[in-house]
Length: 145
Image 1 (spheres, one colour):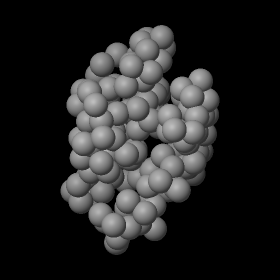
Image 2: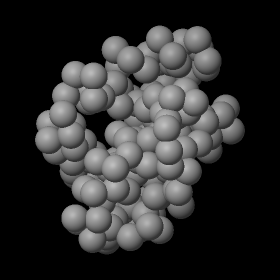
Image 3: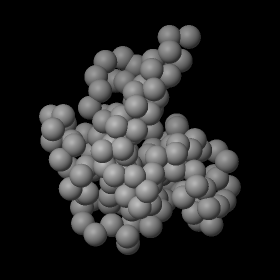
C-alpha cells in the first residue's frame, strides 16, 4: 500500500478535505493508495474539523472512514512513511517545513491553495478538488507504465 500525505497548517480544513476526497475515490490504482493528513501548527485548529470541510464532505456522501477524526501534528515518521507528500500552499508551508523539517523541504510537492485569510470556501474547496483529481489522473497514468 502506498501512502500519500497532505500537509497544511492546522490539519483542520484544507488537508483534511484533500485526504477525504482522495480516499473516497475507488478503483485501481487508487486501491493501492491511502491518503492521510497532518498539520504543521495544529494548536491553530480550534476543533476536530472545519465546518466548511465537514459540510463539503457530507454533501458528497463521503464517509468518516475516509479521513482521520482529529487534527494531528506532522512528525518525521509521517514523512518517512509517505510515498508522496503534498503541502497545500508553498508560500505558507515552505518556511514552516524549513524550520521544522529542513531535510524534507525540497522533497515534497507544493500546491498553491489559499486558506480562509485569502479565499472563501467557495474558492478553496473546488481548487482542492481540481488538484486532487489531477493527482489521481497522474497516479493512474503512472501506474499504467
